[in-house]
Length: 383
Figure 1 (spheres, one colour):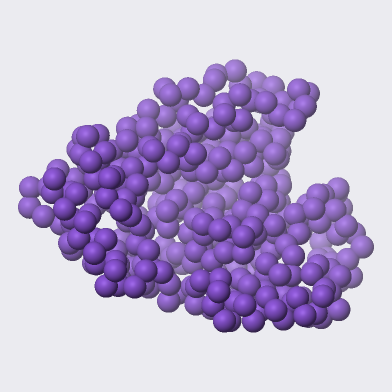
Figure 2: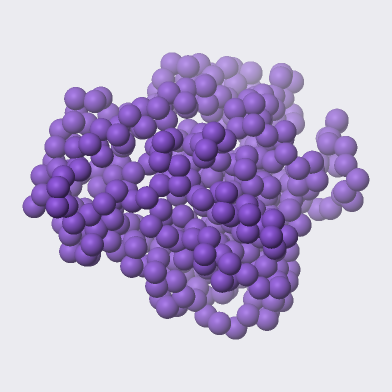
């Protein structure tokens, strides 16, 4: 839903007219609290916590799950850097795991990367592509690990009938300008575990001890930070959430249309596998060789994934340098890991990204215009 939609604009004006922009200071029913209840119903979890970004949501999720110094957290090598930065913010160390051709974390490499210090798995549903959650949850149960679903790029997406973010022990959403619903910045923590929720709630609000009616928990109160979501963000998200399924259905139909047009005999590419193809709302194609992928990436609406460098682990300078805000804050020393992250850490991921192109489904563009975009994609793939 465009932000200039009358329903979004009316929601923003409602909050601005009140003049109360903080969830804990407003004299009116809180927009953030209303959004949290709507997220619980929509996603299918008992608890939702509005925060100020997807990164904050990931940090709160890990802190909520008890992840901290001395722990290792398995993270895919293809994701936004926040997936790896969040464990560091919690005092833990990210350990990189290969992705497979679905562009999501490879369950086989998860098994290879587990050590006695592994505490959690961050599985990332990149580009609206769902992870193999059945396999991941089975591994987690076998080894007693926490599963954090980074669903920041897949708000509303389903995996075998369940919303992503509700399958693991705790999930994280992002609502920044590039996500399925957006408020400039914003995020949410989702869980059905009361302990994780109570800890995340305390951590996201340094003043939680003074809040009237704050969550009742046996967890000792600890010092938090300020990751609170403002009322205005929640207000403009609520009407978008109500229209989200319609947007995802548009993506699903467009995916089917593009696949039908790109499919041709003797093609030297294939549609990337999907962990739940029937409900797929994201699309990528993988080529046999890099040059064909490069040629296809020249078409409008097509991106070769290795070229989106900010999502490739070899470009995460802050993580690669292992530099914290202060030299004594060194999570790597706490776990005793000395092995550096290099191009050889996850070579399979780099090979897949070099040969894979994502196809933008662009639900905001009218279908007649999108058909022209797809026609040019077909020309490019035949060249």
